Every structure is written in C-alpha cells, then in structure tokens.
Image 1 (spheres, rainbow, N blue to C red):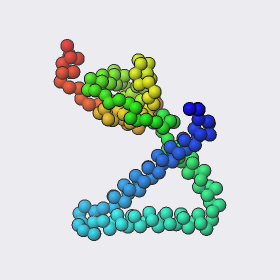
Image 2: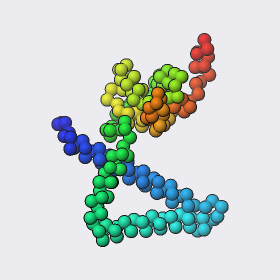
Image 3: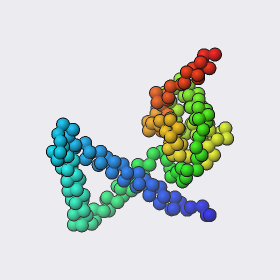
Image 4: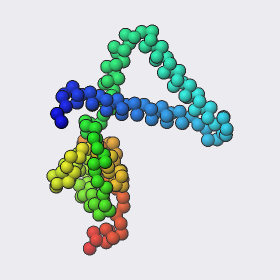
Amino acid sequence: MTEPTAMQRGARTLTHGQRILLRRITDRATAWVRAGRRNDLEGIAAILGCILRLAVLAAGAYGAWLLIRRWPAVLWALVPLWCWAAIRAIPAEDEETPEEEASIPEATETEREQLLALVRDLIGDRPGVHLSVLLGHLQKHGQGEGWTIALLRTRLPLLGLPVRKSVKVRGRVAYGVHRDDLPQPSPAETQQDAA
C-alpha cells in the first residue's frame, strides 16, 4: 500500500473536520430544540416550544438556500469559511483520524488498575496529566504501539478514566485526565499505600 500524498492527507483532514463540525452543529441544534420542551405542561402544549424552535431552524435553512440560489457568488465567501471552521473543529492532538478503534484489545481489571496507578503517578501533585504525556510514557515503556491521542481519548472513558477537553498543566491546556475525575482508590489500595 502506497503512502498517501499531501493532497490526500489534506482531503482526509478536511473530511474529518467536516464530520466533527456537522456533528457539533447537529448536537447543538438538537439540544436547542429539546430545550424548548416545557415540563410544567402536558400534551401538545409541552412541545410547542420545540415545534417553534424547529420552525425557526427550518426557516433559517430555507433562507440560506434562497440566498445561495439568488446570489451564488456568496459561496466564494461561505466555502472558505466552512473549510476554515472544519479544520478548526479538529482538536490540536487529533490530526489523524483513529483508523481502528477496535484494534485496541479489551483491558483486564489488572491492566485497568495498572493504568489508573500510572495516571495517578504521572499526575503527582499537579491538577492533571495531558494525554500526550500519558501516551508518550506508555510508548516509552513498550505499550500503546500504534496508538494515537485520539484513540487514547476514546479508550480511557471506557476504562473508567474520564477525559476532559481542557486540562491545564504548567500553563498549557490540552486534552487530559484531571485529578478530580479519578475514581477513588479501593480500601485495599489505601491499606497498601499506608503500609
């Protein structure tokens, strides 16, 4: 298999960014429409706010379509803005799309505890640890070969380690695990630490 060209990598990045951007726009629009529901009312009256908000979104989409049909030259401004927003939607560490999330084997309870202990050690007295630091440490010690930060970001929550988008460590903000989100150590671990 040949190495992808720079243009192919750029197209993949743009496509990945567009997927993220569309998902964010859809999620925000859905949340906004759902927020129109009234819990203090019943029946059709409870969802009138949702219907009104949906109508506003539909009118906005129709208005944009009419604008583009009437003045297609507006696309000269909209397309570059869309591409710029799509590229900006990709987090800094997520330059590559996770190819195979299933390529990471399921972790045993022992491996989960070891990972949790490693994260605690890397955090130390700091507020958290960035995923790039954690991934670098894992790869330095012969684990996580072929993993990316995006893959790690997907995998950690499945192991009970929540990932935050903004963890500030030493003045730098990036994806990471915050010390407040770590599960409490089990009583057996606490006794081992005390001994």
